[in-house]
Image (cartoon, rainbow, N blue to C red; front, side, top):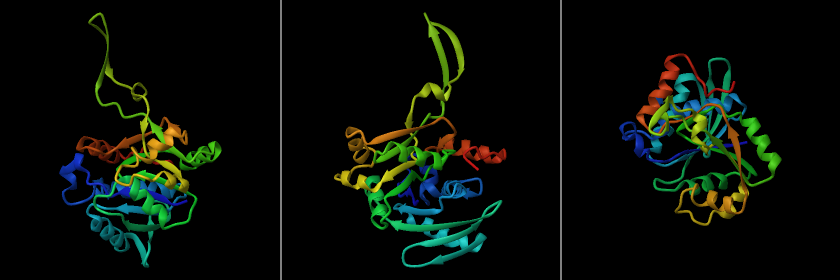
Length: 256
């Protein structure tokens, strides 16, 4: 099953890092976050990627070519780049299609363009700026079992502020807020049937407010509730959180 990774946005909320590179190329430790996302999918057996490019796409394409010089070989044809990358434990073969989807294109149209070049019935899709230990095979099994057109991974947002419990102006509890206090949000990591393209009627709108909105209305979107690790990288603070894991020798987003 092919994995669509949305890599075309401008990353304005972390502009300190994205003046010269797209957000998926912002490094945590020695590798861009895109490498960690792809590595995690490939370790779970999903190694065919479609990168939906836009803002500063040349940086990602140069990086793909550079992988050849760093740790393996790269075969280039008119459609895709096949990257054979040596990981810490075994060789991982990445088959990567780097697709130009437009500088100002919205996410719904980026996904539609990626689906248009392959006849597959099912696709995985995620954002190029977040890491999670979602078990992909379990996610797909869940999707296949319910029979709807789409599945989104629901996650608990990382707690960001100290939490207080107050009764009659008296603070009864002061401490870190738990993720479970935050409710569920869209964590990416979608499974999408290509028939969602029937809902692609507003290409100028984002995926989340067009196709997803219409799928919800038709009760064709199901949520896979993931209680494990999930961390976005929207800000410098969140980049430091991910970098600190690596500095401490931890990779909590790895499933295997």
